[in-house]
Image 1 (cartoon, one colour):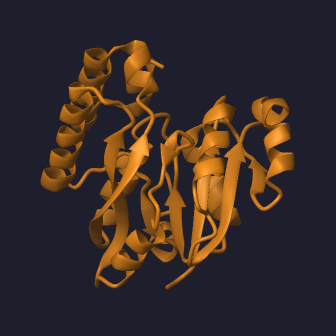
Image 2 (image 1 turned 180 degrees about the vertical axis):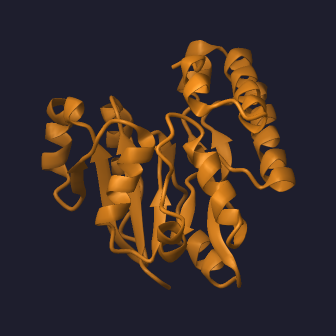
Length: 228
């Protein structure tokens, strides 16, 4: 299969990145490189991790997930770009999901199946909701480890410089050029944000943001009301 560049944007998430680098097999078939795009603010906290992982390409970028992922893509050599959140864990054999997408005509973008690392029933309900959103509307979020054909990514100019909803914007523009491939492989995301801010609050906020986004509210305004 073609080569894969894994791009991980990081901002004040050193512990999550350390776990991801420790447990994920990035030496699988087709993996060209792993690129971590961080800000200068994280230089001190990331220094031990950089020393422990010389195989990773570490780059500095302006703060902002979109700008950090674009900076990583600019350094990437792979024909597929996989954008991975620091707190999302890829499954064993994950390159096969991209190989499956590559074999399907017209596919330019894909995603993994969403799961949370919580045993609670509310987590299962959220997972079902995400699968319905992807099945009905073809709209995965960034925590589903979106992967993109490099040529398609370049053709649309990469991520738009948005403070929020940059993942939805990217997928929408890519789907104008080709198909989305929802892989059956499961990527597991940390439930820490739901646990810290409240399961109902975070879920309701996600629903509110996507509705307002499609009603035309500017991402800059949406960012102001987004809880971290």
